[in-house]
Length: 437
Image 1 (cartoon, rainbow, N blue to C red):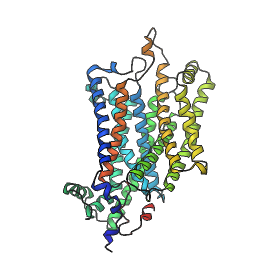
Image 2 (tube, helix red, strand yellow):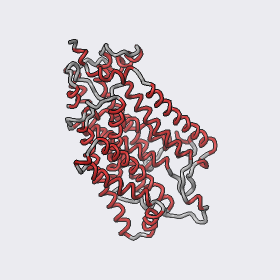
Image 3 (cartoon, rainbow, N blue to C red):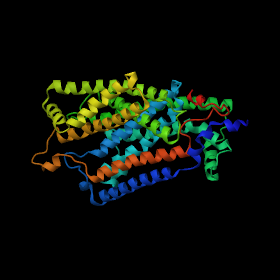
Image 4 (cartoon, rainbow, N blue to C red):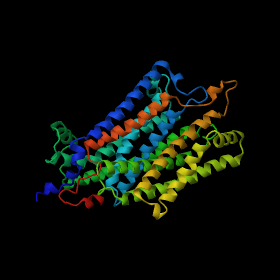
């Protein structure tokens, strides 16, 4: 038999060559959500922040929550993909590219929510031209820019072999312009021993760098909060707390992505229960760490008996009771039960747990941002009641849905351009199991 007939790319031909009616309907739905978000954005630009729930007291809201969440997911993807690559984990291959895509796509979306918080976008260039290094905001701009650059390089090095494989595989029915793009991006890579050695060395270096950058960047984001005197934010453990929460949420997003692509592209023989359990164990360990840091943070605030911290904790247990319970109890205990007990450890249960974890971690960011701003260190006297309490408007929810839609759309388009599971290096083997090692 012709070796090319055994190429695993044949299993991904439907994914790369054509889009089903359901696929077009999905893309149309996402574009519709994005269109609604664009309308909401124009409403905000023309009428100002009065169309949002943000006021003098609560100057941050859902936008900042989304920024923290998406940036956390991106850093989690970098940490997971970089760590799995460096340690040559046996089961990494079917999931590592999803983690890499999660990193880059989330990094492109997250900073956009910062722009939505700026009342005067025309002054944005001043942040670059006249930024002060003493400002934590400037630290964040430098850190995020560096992270985007590094993660793009890491993703490119990781997909270079598959770009060359797609360039050379003749049985794929792809338009000529796609082939030209593969040829250009492959940079003449042919898989010679010298090229492989250089590529492996460069990928190892970038994997190490993105891990370090991810930890540093998300720590910087945490310091923007912790260097203030605001109740609930002034904490010395916010750096590691944010990093753990980021990887925790990212592991859950990775599990959801695995389930979706497994179902849509029928990759049951590539993405198996073993992979769900393996990533689920990572999620379990992170849940334990996240629970510990959460307990430590609130215990010290409660035991210290400072007036402002007491007011914040009372607010959490009254107005924000259910978000607090879901984020800090359900979001911690559920992975420990489902993944920790073998009888509950199924693909469906692990995926549903991951969905709950994503919701819980988003709510966790919400109760970090909003309650603190509703109980400020220096309260505003004689303010209107509606200015003291935050409630997101349809504009903010529409733009939030747009962020999720853009994430899904870019992920969908990326999977149409290159295989969601790496296939280079296993051509001609004729065994799907080889992709698992």
